[in-house]
Amino acid sequence: MHFISANLCPMLFLKIPKLPPVTTALMLANGVVLAYGMITGTQNQIILQYGFVPNYFFYGNHALADNVTRLFSSMFLHAGIAHIAFNLFALAYLGGFAERSIGKIRYLGVYIAAGIAGALLYGTLYILVVGNGSSVLIGASGAISGVMGITAALGNIRGYYWLAIQILYAFIGSIVSIPIAFTAHIGGFIAGLLLTRLLIVVEKKRRGY
Image (tube, rainbow, N blue to C red; front, side):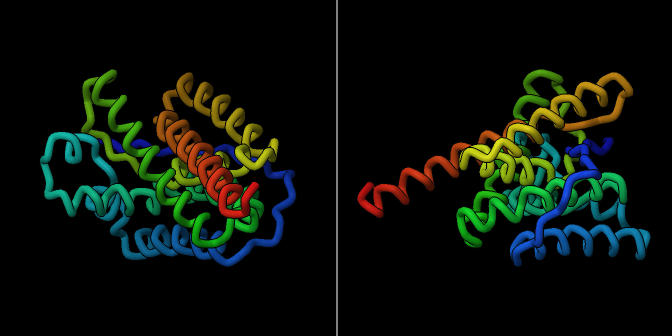
């Protein structure tokens, strides 16, 4: 069993805006989990216990409650400093705009839903195409791709810009044999895009537009 990370490539010259509370809390939560695992020397055990494993979910190898927990917890796990740095830079760059635009509760809901959607798409395709769902999926990139989807749905070009970076990064990763769960990125982005567009339609109807 090996670890598959969903990574994002940052552009370090970009200016990070002031961060609102939910984005800040998400960044802190990811950082604390990684710090705890590294300080206590339990990082691998945490990943194995709380990472998402497609075989467990689709073949019923574990209890339903455990699989649901893994779907949620996997998006707060990272393989190391470089992995989390890439992800948190992207979240810091896009999260402020997304959170202020749709509101704290909606933003958090889309974030979590996108992370779950990304993991499920990854798991489904990995089993159907590769025929092996034993790899452990970790990383916040599915959820953060959902934040990209939010920005794209609101007409902010940065969402598509970051998606293009992911495509390039995944291509480079495939050449140098870095395990990147690009399908989790795509699933998260689509979920964020569609959910935000749905929220826009609902809000327009509520206001009588």
